[in-house]
Amino acid sequence: MSMKALLLSLMLALAAGPLAAAPLRILAFGDSLTEGYGLPASKGLVPQLQAWLDARGHDVVVLNGGLSGDISAGGRVRIGYSLARHRPDAVIVELGGNDLLMGFSPEMVEGNLNSILRQAGRKDRPLLLVGIALPQDRDAPLREEWAAIWPRTAARHDALLLPNLYQPLYDGPRRSLPGLLQKDQVHASAKGGALIVETL
Image (cartoon, rainbow, N blue to C red; front, top):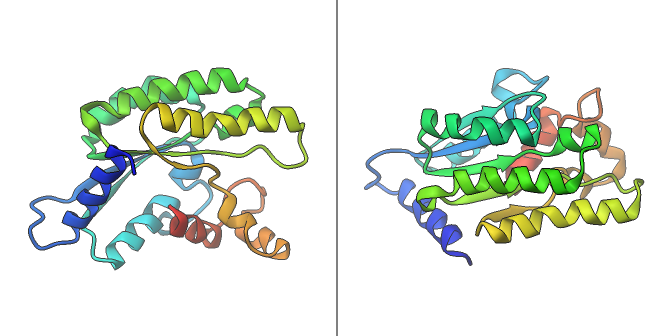
């Protein structure tokens, strides 16, 4: 276990105990998937993660730093402002999906993610990097190149890693997948979001 992961585990354990002086503040920084696009306010990813932590007795506040339509270059610009505004103890970074849809190169995305994690990880903040996978029916070499971004970037910044945000949706029966996505078949539904939260 990395030092930052160990620190986050310790922070969560203390946040569940009676001696916690102030809630642990976790910034969820990302795009529409983080923001909760298309869902009722209480059913987005961040509110569901907050409810999951509350139900287990953790004194934690999850701060929504999601921005619909954002790309990794935009995140690179706004991460400093988000850190100053929210003053988080730990940061979840979920960006890259829109870059993928727009056909930006993996190299560019990786460079932007490195900048975001470098800024977010200052003061030894624990980090969790959440990846986005290229669909299985796409070009295999590009898919492999894209998949390699996440573990390489996480290792470079001593971050915890969830390689594919959507993996929990694909782990179940294929017939259940439509109900785990919204009508656009891109964004997770409230039910799909609940599965993602369990993995997060």
